[in-house]
Image (cartoon, rainbow, N blue to C red; front, side, top):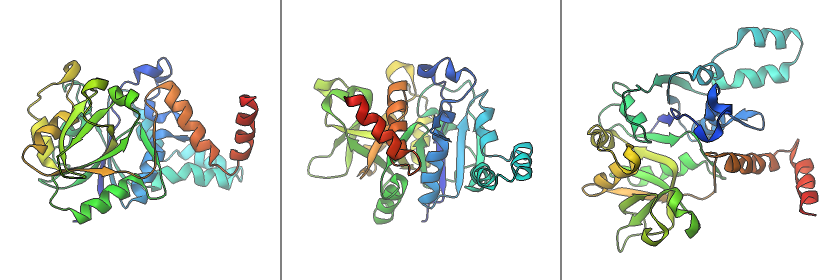
Length: 290
């Protein structure tokens, strides 16, 4: 089955970025001149995805507005002859078919909760890509495409989880995967933010998944985990006990934007690759070292 649908979780409060995120969704913070979420959407589109469902919360109209037309701005740019900026402005609206759905405030907090909003949008056992709205990957082959390629080879998998190795000191920040003995990619367990001493590996989930209704059915039971939150890794742990759940070791550089320092680092990494500003930025960074 060809997967053409993706879901982006963008319903958080961005508390680490307050007060900037008091009125601006974290996913709309810029990576140079593009919002974080547009970079993610472009990855999904480049992977062959067309229908993109974005789960938001109250007060996040900026997300919807960004992927909609702005007639006044477009008219002004056209009248001023600024065709380059006009095309840049129009591009987000043409990327995909967007569906926005608001996460009900009665749902529990946690990275599994957005999946409970998909009633009537996902058919039974219909596979789809699920992406955290603040995780990005710089890679030759788009991260989501690497997952989709593995799915074509293993269509019997109930879920596929993108993973990358992290330093031992950082395992406390992520869901960490334990592989079944004797296998290279079959998941036995996922432990959310374990202590360094209890981490089963250094393979961290990096915010991309292929899922279907089976994991949603588990999440519907609202069994809360660490911190009283509804964790997707907990549901995947239960799923792995009875179904095949695979780990996809992603080739590329995993860049998170979940806190100010990592957002700044990610911005620099993307800026270094830009032909227009990369050389000047690299020269500036070299001067800082001295």
